[in-house]
Image (cartoon, rainbow, N blue to C red; front, side, top):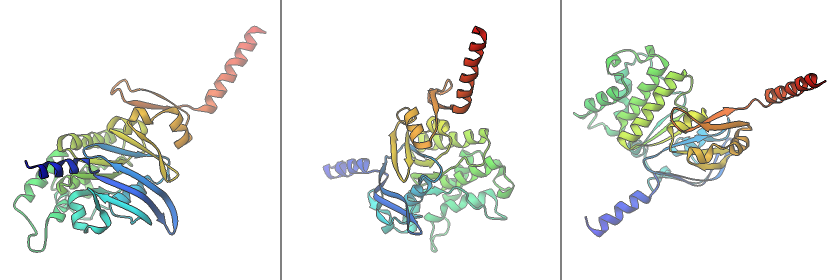
Amino acid sequence: MTAADAKAVATAIDTPALEARGVTLSYDGAAVVEGLDLSIAHGAVTTLIGANGSGKSTILKAFGRLLAPSSGTVELSGRPIRGMSARAVARELAILPQKPLTPSATTVRDLVSRGRHPHQSMLKPWAPGDRAIIDAALRSTGLLEVADRDAGSLSGGQLQRAWIALVLAQESPMILLDEPTTFLDLSHQLEVLRLVRTINRERGATVVMVLHDLSLAARYSDRLVVIGQGRVLADGTPWEVLTPEILRQAFDLEALVIRDPSTGSPLVVPVDVASAGSSTSESRLGMANLTS
């Protein structure tokens, strides 16, 4: 490797996968996020958490080129994302929105095959290796046996895995997931998040997702970013971020943070302040009666 090659490699490693610089995001002229500075490192699972309406999904849309900033820039691997074509972005970044619309009368295989579109063209609509890539995506998500079923007939957990299989077939090194566990029961939530973690570890994919469940976010993330009032309130490892003080500030939540006995990650236990106060009063009354 020449010195120039070594320098190029070092630059690529140091360049964030995604970066927002002074970004303001608005809907109908009203700013939702203002002056955001946030960079996403390669190869990690970063999860955005925050109260409803804090701007988490809005930030994800900006990272995915679905929402143009009112000011500031978003960069993908060091390049302004707005200056890139949709096809060029899709080769580097896959995004799974919060409520993807499943096409009617579409088999699971056909749905997953749509992940190959960024790599195809009018002159080259289908490459010999595409089928193998689709099969590998179906196999990784445990859907090979139902590949010929109508996607609309799948359970909620299976359908979410089918959409993730589409993302895998896209073969983009970065993946954005907006609340991938919404409307799923707990067992399917765990199934989907285990799959996301496996994709990150085995493929080296950079993952940015939005989650509501704080304990699951802590279990499956390398880094948590707390968004509140359109800005970053806290940023760090799960143990650095999930503190009673930050939970109180970001969620107006009184909670204990304990070690999960299964994983060792932070486990958030909400405290019912009213009940706690009532119990304390009743206890004091009982003690008074005993001593009277």
